Image (tube, rainbow, N blue to C red; front, side):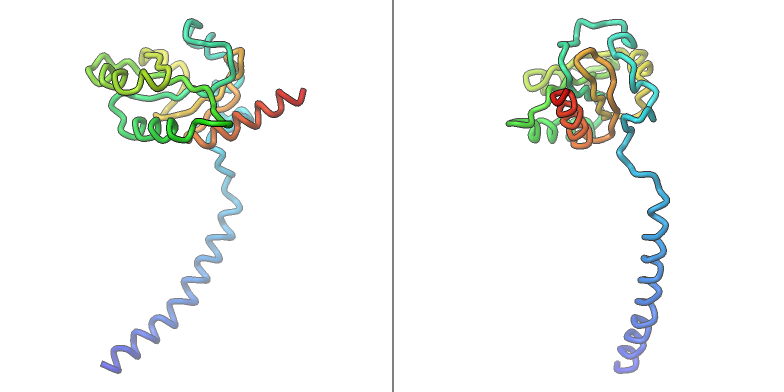
Amino acid sequence: MNLLLACLLISYLIALPIFFHSLTRLKAELIYLPVNEAINSKGSHPIVGAKTTDILQNSDWFPQTSMIIMTAAPDCPVCKSELEEMLSQNHGEYFVPVIVFLIDDHSGAKEQYLQMYSSLVSIVPIEITDFEKLNILITPSYIVVDKTSKVISVHAHFLEAKKLYWEYIKVQMSR
C-alpha cells in the first residue's frame, strides 16, 4: 500500500510541473488569438453599415429607434432559453428595445413560439430568404441597429450586444 502511495506521489510531483509548463505555454499562445467581441462594429460582418430596412425591403416593423434585433428559429431550444434570459435581464435603467426576427419555417413551431412570447416582446416573422439576406449563420444572433435601421454590429450573445448598444447610445448622446 505504501509503495502504491509513493508511486502516486512521485507521479503527481512529475506531472504537476509538466501541467503548469503546458498551461503557461497555452496562456502565451492565447495572446495571438483575435479578441472575440463576436462580430464587432469594425466591419467584420457583411451587413455592418447596411440598413436592415433596405436589405429586407420592408420597414413596417421598424419603430425608428435604436434597438437590438434578435434572430431566432421557432424550433431552436437555445433561442428560447436565450430569449427568456434576455427578457429576465432587460429591464430597469438599462432597458434596451428588442425585436425578434423569427424565421417563418411554415410549421406549427412558429405558432407555438408566437403564443409563448408575443405578449412579452415584439416578434416579426421573416421568411428564410430574408434571413439569408441578413447573412446570419446562427441563431440566436443579435443585430444592433441605430434609429435609421443601420447595422452597428452583430453579436452571438445578448449581453455583448447590450454592452455595445449602450456604448453607441453614450457616444450619440455626447454629440
